[in-house]
Amino acid sequence: MSEKTAATKVIKCSFCDEQAVTVIRYAKLRLCRKHFTDFIVRKVRRSIERYRLIESGWRVLVAVSGGKDSNSLLHILAKLSKEMNFEIIALHIDLGIGEYSKKSREAVEKLCKGLGVPLVVVDLRELIGAGLPDIVARTRRPACSVCGLIKRYVINVVGVELGANVVALGHHLDDLLPYIFKNFILQNLGEISKLGPKTESDEGLIGRVRPLYEVFESELALYATFESIPVVDETCPLTIRGRSLESEVRDFLERLESRSPGFKIGFARSIARNIDFYRRGLASSKPLRRCAYCGMPTSEDVCAFCKLTERTLGKPMGPIVREKVRKVIASLGLVRKSEASN
Ligand code: AMP
Ligand code: ZN
Ligand code: ZN
Image (cartoon, rainbow, N blue to C red; front, side, top):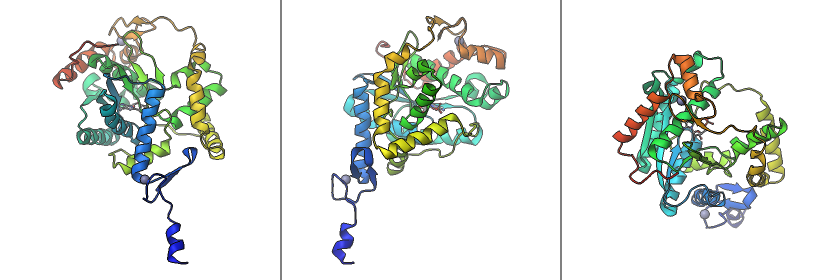
């Protein structure tokens, strides 16, 4: 083979003379490292604008687990916060799951230090005197459901105490679509309304946004590698993995995407357009009240977190969590100067 032929074999980036390291089929692009990371940041920016996730001047609380998805989200939002003029604060909840939590916390601390982003770490054992495994051992509920309930509560309390306008979560396209599809198959149409790019805020309830709504998992893995983002590369030891309906649906979606690249993003956009329709499928949601113990929003007399902790630890821990979170935020000098603006 002549030298010339060998040279033409190198696939070049669509935007520069560098060698392409990845092919984006749905956008018909071949990209070098730099243009790939720029492409992802621009894509997230367009989602923020398209779905009106974040406004100029907002304080955004970014919930960061230590995994590649939310760590990449923080890295991307740190870039965008300057050009789009919003403030970011990272939150990590140390759930006390042995080595796994230790490594996750270290990855988040290292990332925030490198980016110069303020970080709030709350340790569940310090907040309520028990880690996630202790609580899971005292209930019959699956670990992931207990974990989700605790995280939702703590994230919301931290958001409220910080005067955040919104909480950003690291869910991406490949997390959300299988659940959307599963809920469609089971005809739980109301549940689909919770899986869109955002949920609106309500009295005492901070809105949640998903800036990675149109980003593939594989893109985040590549982004984290190219940007040398510190991440914990293990799955949580409490996760139960099986051949679930979600994983069947995931394979099915993968086949559709490879047959017609762009299918997943198009589908996600249609869901977002129809969110109001899906919201009507929610069982008549009761008006929000205040938890009798902690004062946080709930549709019952007592919030799910106070109920869970009362049952497992003998005492509703909501009020204690709020008090301790307030102290952590004050000690970090992060109390918002201007009026909280929800
Ligand atoms: P998961 O509940 O594990 O599906 O995580 C969903 C989102 O919640 C992640 O993308 C993060 O934004 C956030 N999150 C998960 N775990 C933590 C954690 N330990 N601390 C802070 N945020 C978290
Ligand atoms: Zn390039
Ligand atoms: Zn409560």
